[in-house]
Image (cartoon, rainbow, N blue to C red; front, side, top):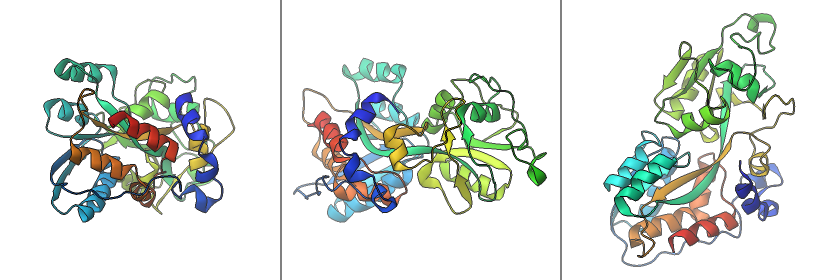
Length: 322
């Protein structure tokens, strides 16, 4: 997590983190969403699979307030969002990673200005193992050594659970690898951070079409390991603690560790919109974003298993579309 993120949310640490219960509570300083009149029409969202459940839940809450609004949601992967925004087939482009420079360049070539990034939640990109797996945790050098064929973080190949430090029945068991496909923002983030930008071990790596199928695969495979957003965890898997680099200091994927930057695979969840800086945003899209960054919208983030925005981040984000 970068310094900008830590600086923004350090102001809200006291109200957001603390006890386990408080860690999953929304910031009391978030504004309550108040309905306005005259909101109707069609809203299309195309993008991240990680945010798909969130988008569906936000859409349900928004339609309860505005029954004359129709919201269509497609969640094939973050890489589908920029093209949809450029083509005008979607007003909302959910992404679990920032847009790349080339994606922004293509948007600017079409419209003459950059797309607007809206932060909507905080996620721990979790490394999941089967619930019966006794592994204490891994550092990123070990994660790279498990998943990659290039070992850019300096480790040696880890092919079995014995190579990862387990003994007994686990020692000679090959490690099964599960993860997302290349259109996924989750795939891109994991590749860039956990593999140091290196390549996956394609001979063992099993691509899955969605975040939930990654978790389902590990649930069915006692010797499997994979990665997905923390919100997709189930009772059949366990999100293991991680350490940066080759450190031995492990950190659980908790809200506090994500906010502090101690957990090495934390990220913002975001949506992108087409906002002409010289014109007001259309009312329907604006109200939907305002709902997402309200107290009610961030309660949805908690219900879906992700971590809510501190009020200071939500306020800073809303300034970009006002």
